[in-house]
Amino acid sequence: MSQTGSQSPDRVSTISTWQQQPDNIVDGAESRPTVSVGEHSLASVGEAGPEQKSEQVTSERPTDEQILAQENQIKAEEAQRHSLIGGIEPLSALAKEYEAGSSVFVNKIKTVEASYRAIRRARGDGNCFFRSFVFAYMEQLVNLQDLPERNRVVTCIRQWEKKLVEAGFEQLVFEDPQMIIIDQLNSLGTLDPLKVSVLESNMLDAELANQVVMYFRMLTSAAIQLRADFFAPFIMGMTDEGLTVEQFRRRCVEPMGEESDHVHIVALTDALQVPVRVVYLDRSLNVMAGGFGGGDSSAQVNHHDFIPETAPSAATATAKPLIPRVHLLYRPGHYDILYPI
Amino acid sequence: MTDQASLLLKKQLKELTKRPVDGFSAGLADDVNLFEWNVTIMGPPDTLYEGGFFNALLSFPNDYPQSPPTCRFTSEMWHPNVYTDGRVCISILHNPGDDPHGYEVASERWSPVHTVETIMISIISMLSSPNDESPANIDAAKQWRDDREGFKRKVARIVRKSQEML
Image (tube, rainbow over all chains, first blue to last red; front, top):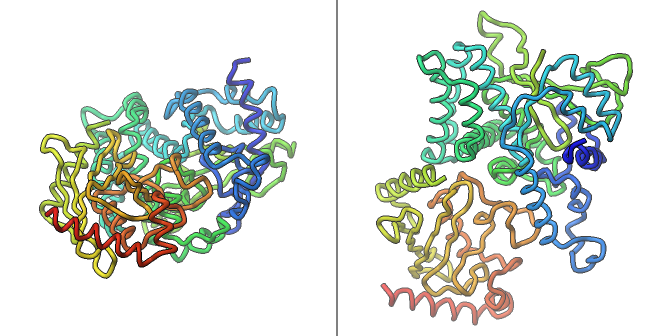
C-alpha cells in the first residue's frame, strides 16, 4: 500500500466523528461545525468556547499560534499531495485508500460504483466545491458540445453583471475573471473550441483557476445578498455567534479558502440555474429517503439534489424535470467530481 | 501571477484618477512600479484625526488580489491599531491563515474583492473607531483606554505635524 493510502483512513476517521446527515437545507444547514478549512482533526479544539483563554489551559489546548501553524502545515502538505484539479481515476483508487480503514466506506464506494464510473479530485484547500463544480460543469459542456446550454449560461453570467455591482462589487474587480470564463465558454462551436486538455491546464494554472474561483465566490455572495431574507435564518443558525447575512458573505463566502456549505451550493446553483447532485460518502448508517444502494443498509449511500428554486423550466416549452448536470462526491469537509456511468 | 495583479492595479489607478474618492488620494509611489502606491488619508471629520493629512505606502504582493497588500504610514501616527513602525493592523489586510489576533477571533479577513478604495475606507473607519481589544501599539491602546486626554493631545500634535509637512 502506498504511503498516501495508509494515511488516509486515519485522516478520514477523525473527520467522521462529526458524522453529518445529508439533509435538505431546511433542517441541515447547521450540521457542519463552524471551524473548518479542511483541518478536520482540529475541529474539536477549535470549538472550545471563546471564553476559554489559551493561557489558562495551556496544557490541554494549543495556543492560537500553534493551531494556525498546524493548519498552514496541513495546507502545505495537501498542496504537495494534490494538484488543484486531478486526473480522472477509477473509483477503485478511492476504495484502496480505505481498505485498511472503515469497511463502511469500502462498502459505500462499491454502491457508488454502481452509478458512477470515475472520480476526479480537487485539492482540499477550502475551494474544492467551487473548483469541482466549475470544472465538472464546463467539462460536460465541452464533451457534449452543448451549445444551447452554453448560450443560456453565458447570458445568465452577463445578466449577473448588474446584480454584482448592486451587491457592492466593483466592476473592475470581476470583469477580468468574468471574461476568462466567458471566453472559454464562447470558444465552443468555433474553429478553435475549448478542449478538455486545455480546460485541465487552465484549472491547474493557479492564477487563472483562482480568478475563476474568485468570480464564482462573488456570484455566490451576490446571490445570497439578493435572497437575504431566504438565507438569513439558515445563516443565523450555522454558528454560535449568529452571523448576519452581510458578515457571512464577508467571512465565509468571499475569502478564498473558506469552505462551502449547503448555503453556498443552494445560492450558486440558483444563481446559475445549474442543478447539482451531491453524493455523501460518510460513516452514517441511516437509511435515508433519497438514497440508493442494495439491501445492505451499511452500503446505503445518501445523496441530495440541489435543484434551482427559481427554475424557469415551467415557463418554457421544454419543461422537464431538471436532472443534475454536475455530480459531486462529498466526504466530510471535501468535494470531488463524480462521473456517472 | 503578476499579469492579473498589474492589470487590476492599472485599472484602479485609472479609475481613481478619473473619479477621485472623498477622504483620500492615491497614486503610484514610483511611476514605473504599479505595486507601490502612495496614499494620503485625510483625517476623518468629527474625529481626533480631523484636519490631518497622513501619508502611507501601500505595497501589493505579486499575487494580489489573492493576497492582501500591506499598508504603512510614513507620516507619524499614534493609534492603537498602527504599529510604532507605521504598519496598519486591521483584519482585512490579513489572510485567513495569517492572523495575529488569534484563531478564534472571528473577523472579516482578506478577500480578493478588496481594492485600494475599499482598503482606504477600512483604514479611515479604523481612524474613526480604534479597536483596543487587539492592539498593535500597546502604549497607544493603553493611553486610549486610561488617559483619553493625553491621547487626544498626542494625536493633536501629529495632526499639526502632518499639516506642517504639506
